[in-house]
Length: 79
Picture 1 (tube, one colour):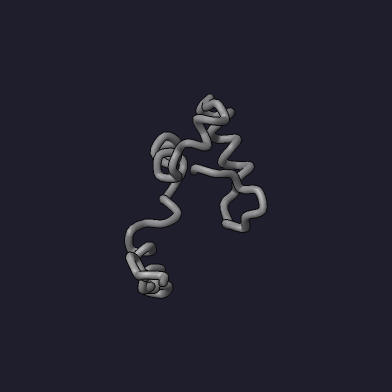
Picture 2: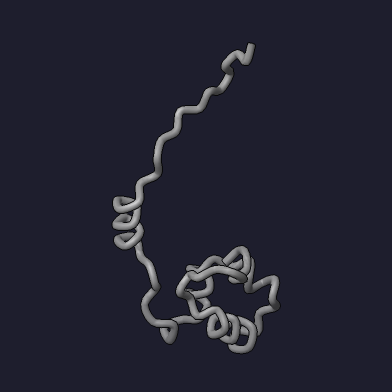
């Protein structure tokens, strides 16, 4: 979960996740923000429900929004 939600429209319930991490699990703020979503989900246990995005969803998004290959002009002579 590296980073903070300020200004993001990620669709995640940040206040709820922070309450669960800070109050429910007793994490310190820096511990919470250094977790990945998967780590927090594992720590919350079965009550957390299904993980929001699994491999199949990630694969689907990767197909829908592929990384574009860019040609890099590495080592080109500027002169």
